[in-house]
Image 1 (tube, rainbow, N blue to C red):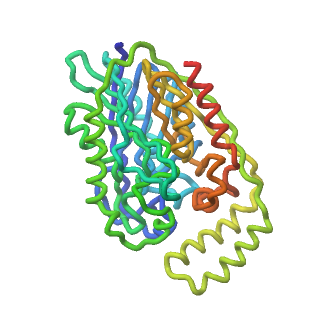
Image 2: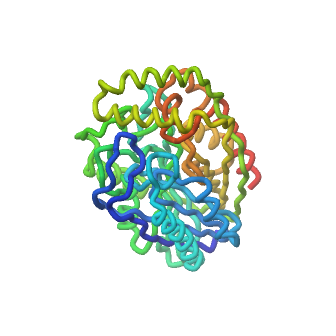
Length: 414
């Protein structure tokens, strides 16, 4: 098929000195730049997909960008979830958020989208899927489920050259740990660079899949220390990114057929009922531990105590977010908010016809959305992460399933 497609890249690297996002144990500001952070936009007919090198984006920020692009039929604003970016969500994942940078980032997203739309030209859409390149691991438990297929989309000009490509993969961009204080896109930046090197004149967008339980193999609790790790280095990010890029470039793609479109709707997701007595007991425990805790643990306990004082008392029973589905020929791209698990993506993809890519971190990032089967296993994503996300309680069992139902219904109608 032929669609009108265009892509654009805009730099959004902050200056040193701003607060970083992603690790409660990292309290110092950014000291410098390792690799640039970017906003990337892909316009396909009347839809626009925007990716931002940030740990997360608040739903209010995404709504503002969407409102500025009201002439577009469908808009998705997704974070890559790098933990080497600036604080961008007030009250979530670290801070403070720098107001001047937030305004710049908003303007950059809008400018990138307009530039992509202006760059549209006739292009054929090709789609393909490859096996997991073997990077992602279940970080919650040995032998736990891992669903991390490699999704690839290529937009080719009439002369056969690649104008833009999309690589989708589910693995937390946390190769760099809490000891890193340099801006970095983590491994997704390496993937994009390698793909663009192999396809000169093209723009590559990396889409982070549903990887709430997946990373390169370390426990989520390992990130609660600012100590250095020999396995979490820029060299490791380069190696991992090049491995994923090589696998993506080897994926054969085929014509996706005809027709594009999109649909979006808001979804209300329930939170667990907070228990004030349980919170009070935790506060007592944390206060008792604080005087004898090590430096990293002490910072974490202070953050949890601040949460108990400022956030836990809030009365909130649900969070409302957005689900969007785009159709590019035979491909349905499903964009989910927050941090869903890979098994949710597997469930959605298995219930839809044709080619499917399911991503997270889109149009808002309020926390983890574990499947109901994961709650009995406990752990960081189920029991602890909501505090760093500034939420009074975790999402309730069944929230991920409600999200999947909405996504399937929406995408099935395209």
